[in-house]
Length: 589
Image 1 (cartoon, one colour):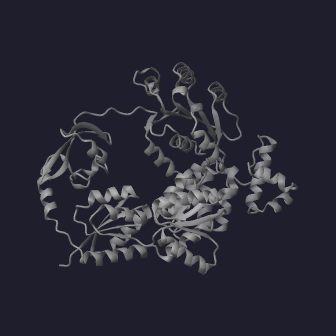
Image 2 (cartoon, one colour):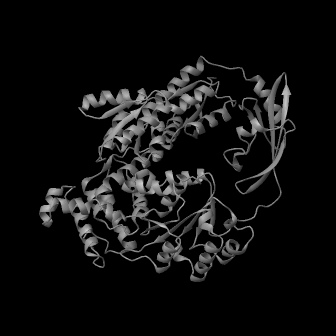
Image 3 (cartoon, one colour):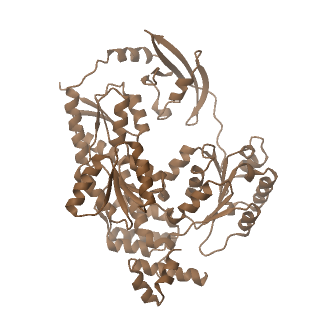
């Protein structure tokens, strides 16, 4: 009987994972297990599974290079085809500003050939080491380039530096070629696995979950139950610091408490660390309604997976927000429903000097009396801590009696002086700030961030939507290039009462129902009709609210005309009877 080749697939992004799953279903000669992990996370996955009788590991780009340095199993990298790069360049054509291609030779060599064939004048930068990407992207940003076509290394640094990015995705044909290469390699490669089988036989009889590491931190064996979590509660730094007598501790994983013991075991002059993990019978107390604790990793994950990060929606506010992040001043964030206030609060936290401490969110709309009493009166209240970030979400919706108590506690305990305080307020369309928020701003000398509505950014709509769509392509393994012109016009003329939150949901639905290269007018028209049924039918292109200042009304009219005339400032100025200087002053707001 012909041997089945066992492959461990480690995909740096979701679209590659989906492609691997698709190809593997049609390969009866292969047994493939596929995990999602980028860079170091991918290395950790490879090290964790390297002793499970896999013949070959398949990954991509920098993740594949890092894995190759850490494991003894052969590693194959999924290459980029010319068609992969061409698809990405076509998608980038929707971006109205300057952009560049950045990556290792596997990307840039193909990009240069395509640019020559297509007669495209595009800046292409080749890097040879991961650390080169940081300086290259920093230089691009300083030179006014705001988006990069890149691999996963470039995408990670672009996110951190506030640049938009479109990831070059490997198509099905590239994945198929990597699988074929794995089959060829495995026939000429075999390791004796009897010693590892011996370890497994001994350790699988234990009643607890067992983890066995060598002195370098490589995992020899694991019987950890994945139902408790993807990662066992033992990490490499613990190996380096474990004393000769071993350790004993408890830890919570997914609301389950575990007892963990570790000891050193010596065999044939080799040293191993053996950890036993046993579920404790002590119940863990329930969380408190309306109070949420986040660490830096959780906040970064929430922000970088949001519409704000994917679409580059920070825009011209980035400089102001970065400057505020470095201060300790209280900050008030205002804006209409769905304008991204939560994400800006997270952004301030993850770029602040306090980012390694907790981010504590108090949802003033959800919090109940029991949770409030815990905050205000309990000796265990988080208000007793220092150097934390407190985020009061929707302070305008806190009951008046609770607001008075909070005001007293903030003053009495000097909370803003000992910690970072951020609060948000939902500012309804064309309404002024509530009196209590104005009083809070003055009383605590708060800095203010007003988030513009989506209606105010219609000249950027195509860019915002296209960048988010590139992220959805990566997640879903799709290859959508943009919108039919009539579909884009429908989206631009809609009022978006719930702003970016609503736009994200609508784009998710449109991408999900689209199997062609462009999102159609038919799908868009139907979906926006459904939105109007939900929010009311007066959200159309002619709905201009007159309950505002003349300046705001003029700005709204100018921005709408710029969208209709595809950014032609001369034509808009002529139609409205104003100078181009006046038009530019309104449009840049």
